[in-house]
Length: 97
Image (cartoon, rainbow, N blue to C red):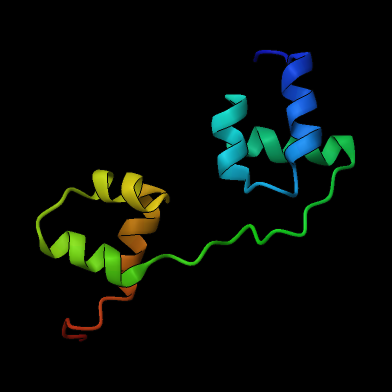
C-alpha cells in the first residue's frame, strides 16, 4: 500500500466534490475506494451523485455492432460489469421468459 503524496492530497482536497470520483482516480492515480476512503477520513463532503446513469441505448448499439464489452465500457466511461448489467437488464428488444 503506497502512501499518499502531498500533491495527491492537495488535488483531492481541491477537487473532491467538483469532479466525479472516477475522474479523480485518473488524476490522482489511486482506486475509487481509496479516493472515497481518504476523502471520508479527511472530512471532505461531495454533493455529486456517485451513481451514474448508463447510456443504455449507446451500449446496446455498440453491442449490436459487435464491439467487445471491454471497449464499450472504456468508451462510455463505466465498468465492464456496468455494461454487462445494462445489456442483461435493459435490453428492450429481447424476449423475456
